[in-house]
Length: 144
Image 1 (cartoon, rainbow, N blue to C red):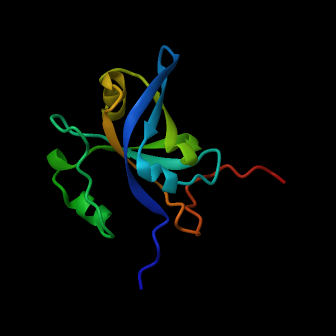
Image 2 (tube, one colour):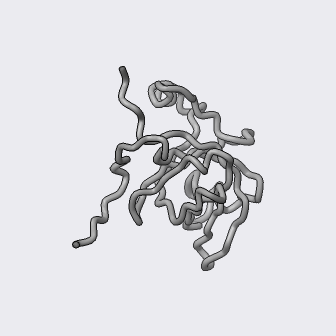
């Protein structure tokens, strides 16, 4: 029997974009499955997958062996993935906040964020609330 995965894929759409500074925007994402997401620390790591040019949403393989199939995709067909910190999770409202640094057209995350509008879709890889095990996707451990 395979061990239960501590992270899972969440299909989300941009609900709102909040300008925090000239080079920092908070993206508020929503999706029905966000209710099944959890965070375990103030620096919870997540992954964000971005659509390729011409796609409305990133085409990320699903299922138990999704990552093996994702890595097997040719570079031109593999949706870019970047690591972010989950800023805030409101699972009951099906909302999750992620802050994006805007530094122009220099990479897939900044390029997407620069042009993102409500309704634009990404896929998040985040801790699964249905799994009791720790995701271990955080580092900061304050002293007692």
